[in-house]
Every structure is written in C-alpha cells, then in structure tokens.
Image 1: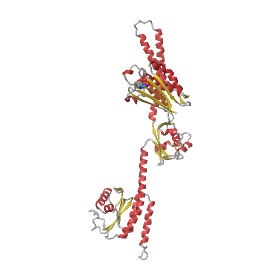
Image 2 (image 1 turned 135 degrees about the vertical axis):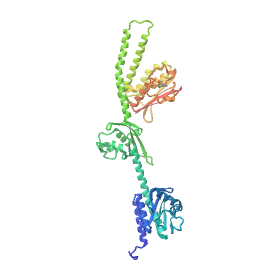
Image 3 (image 1 turned 30 degrees about the vertical axis):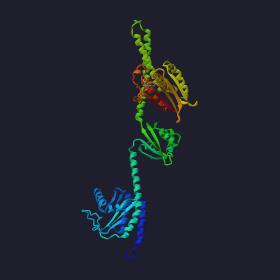
Image 4 (image 1 turned 45 degrees about the vertical axis):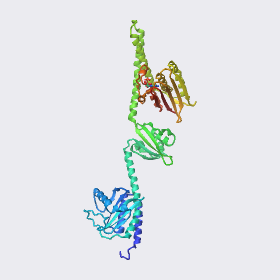
Length: 521
Ligand code: ADP
C-alpha cells in the first residue's frame, strides 16, 4: 500500500475501538485475553506483549500470558519479580500508564540475566475496574523510543474498553466454576435432591433424583412435579406429598416426614425447606430424601418377630395357667406348713401377668380405626383408675379444654391404653396424698395434646431420654415394691407414633413429672 493509499491514523484507531468493543460478546476469558493482546500489540506495532490478571492484591495465576515461553513455575517467578521490582509493579503502585523509552537507562525495567528476548522499549497500561487494578498489559519492542505519547493515549482508551470485556468474561468464568462446584457437590450426595421453584418446576436434580423421576426407563415428561404425577398413574407417595406442599395443600409437611416408594421398594425420610426471595415470598423448595430402607426393614422384621412370638407364646402360657389351675384342684391334702400353695400362687400370678403383657402387645399389633371422642376415653379411664388413686389418697383433677366436635380417628382401645399407662404411672410413682392433673386440649397448630402431671418422686435427668425404651426402669429403693416391667411407656410410644404423633416427658427428681403426647388432627 503506498503512503497515499494508507488509511488515516484516526480511521485505524476507530477500527481498533470497534474491534475491542466486539470483545464484549466473548465469554471465554483466555480467548478475550488473547484477543486483547493481539489487537493492542498490532495497533502500536509491539513485537511482543504480556498480560496478567490481578484482583487488587494478588495475581490470578491461572491467567497469565508472558512475552517468553516459560513453564508455570518460572512464569510465577518472573511475574512476582516484575511486580516487586519491575515495570508492572510500578504501574500497579502508581495506577497509571507509562512508557519506558529505553530499557537500558530506565531503572523500572527489570532485566532477567538469562533473558535473551531483545527488548529496548516498553509501554505498560493498567486496566482499572472499580478502583482496583484488574490487569496489567506490557508491550515491548526491540528498538529504543518505539512507543510515543499517541500510543500511550490510545492504549489507555483501549484498556478502559477492554476492562469491561475482561470483567464480563471473568464473571462468567466464576459463575461457570461455581456451577461446576455445585455439580460436583450434587454428584457426591447419595441422597435424592430436588430443587423446585414456587410452582413446582424442577430447577435442579442430582442422579439419584433422576432415577426416582424415571418411570419405565422414561424420564419425567415435563420439568414440573405436578405434570410428572399427571402422566404416571402409579407414582411415588413421596413425590405426591412434595407436590401437595408445593401446591400449598399440605404445608404441614414442611416438617420432616417419612414415606415409602413401593415402586422402588425404598423408604425415605424427606426434608423440605423453603427458600425465599428478598420480598420474603416463597421462591421455591429444596427437597432432600434420605434412604432409610435398612432401618425400616429392621423395624418391620422386629414387628414381624414380635407378632410371631406374641402369637406363639399365647398357647403355652394359656396351657400353664389352666394346668396350674387343674393342679390346685387335684392337689392331694397338704401339710399345714407346706409351701406348695404359695408356689402355686406365684406361678398363677406370674403367668397371668405374662398373659396380660401378651394381650397388650397383640392389641398394639391388630387395631381398627374409628372416630373417637377423646373426652369419653378420659372419663372412662378416670372411672377405672379413680379407686386406685383414692386408695393412695391422691386427688385427681381433670381439665378438658376440647371443642365438642373434636374427633380423633384412631383405635380407641390403643389410645385408651396409652392414656391409662400415663395415669396409672402417675398414681404408682406418686407417694400417698399426691395431686394428679389430666389435661387435654387442642394446640394452636391443630394437634390433640394429652398431659398427665403429678407431684410424685420425679425422674433424674439422665434417665429421661431412655424412659420410652422397652424394659427401661429407674432403679430406686422407694420403687422396689412397685410392680412393673418397664414396657408401659414403650408401648405408649409405639401407639402414638403409629398415628404420627409424639410422646414427651418433663420431670424433676423429687418434684414430679409431666408426661404427654400429641396426635395430629
Ligand atoms: P413400669 O412402670 O412398668 O416400670 P413404664 O414403661 O411405664 O414401666 O415406666 C418406665 C419407668 O419410668 C418406670 O419404671 C419408672 O421408673 C419411670 N416412670 C414412669 N412414669 C413415672 C412417673 N409418673 N413418675 C416417676 N417415674 C416414672
């Protein structure tokens, strides 16, 4: 091109600025940096260039481009040296662009002894964003005085524009990395994890969740939980419950709940949490389903064994009872001081107690649901147990604060059994002339609550967490004569949990106890 044909410098500068502004469309950080180097180098006729990113304090070692080809360790050493003693360090400290007209005479130029790259002049510009130096570009040339003031101004303008492109790509890069991290975390979680928006649209799932949402080798047709249910007639109750929560039909299940998938033969403990947007409105839900199949299998095995054992034990126990009765009738005349009648009585009492226990266990296994008025149950228990209480001089106070239409759908025999256990314990473990309060009420969050309070011997703190375990009894001299096997409270727990309720106890040794349970309404 002859000097007459050459485009005017102003045209070249504008072309350069247009090309730099196009960098904004690029999101790959390495690519943006390469393009910045090549555009800026060719605009000022630099022989080589180096560019590295900085966060205001440290260098981003993953993104450095140097004049020389060096291995990563050497690169780190070179950049550290030019930051401490060289031109780039000067530019960062002074936060302004500069020219080294001759590297031989300018002290800011650090000469590496083994560097054979011919460099006599340099131009260095900072890329400043948000008042911090985001990157430093150094352009070099083998001849002295190559760069001039026009180059410096042009490079400063270009650097300002390129800063936005680099920042953009950096943010995208960060986002990408965070997403990768999240993916790795999701992969590492063995539990099923679903992230839903407010309308049940599936935003994120991990591999186990994908399996749950796959029916007959087909993935869920729509990324909406409700649609999934709609498409498959046979779905998991777990997913159905999640859907009810999302559609606001069942907010109670924001408490952890257990459910079983017959399709995958798995039991899950499901925890659903809401996430909210800044306006405090529900933005969506995070659902974690923890596989508790092994635990549940063990429970089922235990229940099954219990059922078999209870059934099988009833016949021999009945036989012992009837045989001992026959024995009493057929007994030959005994000496007046014979201990045999006493032994016979011990056998009779023990086997009857055993039969009572077996009956309790059997009743817990086979139950029938019926609409039940809890006030009636309490009255019936009082009628049964009042004589026992009166015998010990206790006063029994009853507070029933229940709406007249409150009905429990339960097996009345079982709930009565649970209430009776609490009341008879209060009578047993309260010294004479005690005071016992029975309180039944509906809680604000719509549960039926039953509480039995006594001013008896109380229970020491260390026993409280074990009381509902089978066969657990507190050994105390004053209760040595109190009859019991430590199964009553564990039976109460089994019954109440069967109806998705909870048992609880509060007590202070020497002061008294409060035993309670609640049932959902
Ligand atoms: P049992 O009464 O047959 O021993 P339970 O399971 O009903 O079995 O109770 C377990 C233990 O809890 C009892 O042995 C007793 O030590 C303690 N306990 C239960 N109720 C009371 C109460 N109201 N006051 C003090 N201790 C209690």
